[in-house]
Length: 448
Image 1 (spheres, rainbow, N blue to C red):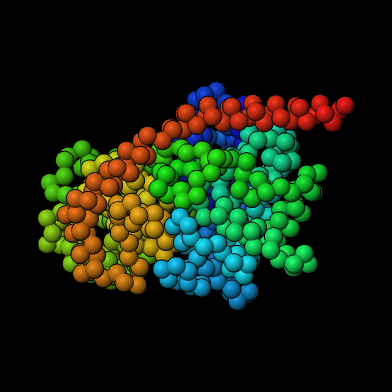
Image 2: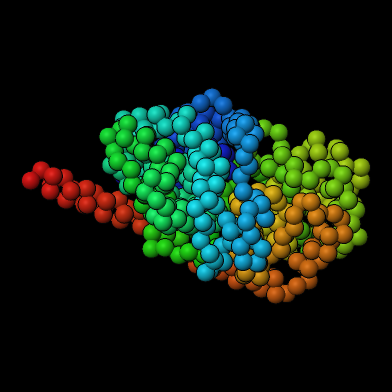
């Protein structure tokens, strides 16, 4: 079969789809990846066929545009604690506990109008026509689209292909949409504005289709996180084992030697996406952390770009500075990990059973954290609370608390028990056959 993959236009999202794309190719299927021009090197570097779609701008430029639009609207995306508090003082958006209260109409509308829709439009409108045109020319049987890459769903609808959404984090979008639809049904008939539906309807009708809810969250959803990170299990969810992809990287020789002391990986920057590295913490704060843990009997591996390394005034003897390191190679020998909550670092820590400390302001980190704390496999800290003593205390707990390690190892076993991408390919083949059968029966009924 022919499979079109449409990632959200950010390099880490391409990486997230590579292992499944490999499995599809080695099973004999034709695969093409539709990506913004600045993503094509990442696509072809993974041995996949890429097709350029959308604008010439980079993901960084798009992100800057998103922030500019937020300022112009005078709006900001919801943040932990930034909305009306629910049970336990949590913003309801970030409350992923079973039995939590639904978002109300005003809350749900705020989420979609200020967070989901603006980002969806900016990331999809510029590539929508190109992606649909590609689908009309190539006629894929299956479209895999990354979460929020709605152009993939519209393209699938335009050609009658089966389509599956691929997650990169806790699936908060499905429950937010369900909350919105529940609140919408309780509104007066003349007060049910649904900006996301209106936007998708405009696009799908342009190509002769009609809106349906699976354009929002897929006919099926591939979820790479273990069950504890799926607060609302659904029959349309397809679990898939997280498999690391390190991009174009080299295994350093020092990794061949066993660590002389408990090894700790620490990373605070975004080293994957193009553009200047975004640092969560300034050099002075990182220096304070190094000074606070410099006397510990550990082997600290700190990833920093060369320029940031030069801003440090001293490096303890127990610290190894590197610009980058393949996570799948270093983490199996690590006793703890301190990181910025990125998709790849978080998934690798789960796969290799490493207790982790999350230090991040990323949108999805509160969701990951709640699930992580519920499993007892990690800790978190707000960037504003980070200082040397605080990180030292948390790191000692990660290293010395046997319960944290046991729980992290249990999560590792759960990850490894999930279907591997090769197994998921067989499931996708069955879904496509079932989709064809339904379409054939529908065509027969229409002909009669």
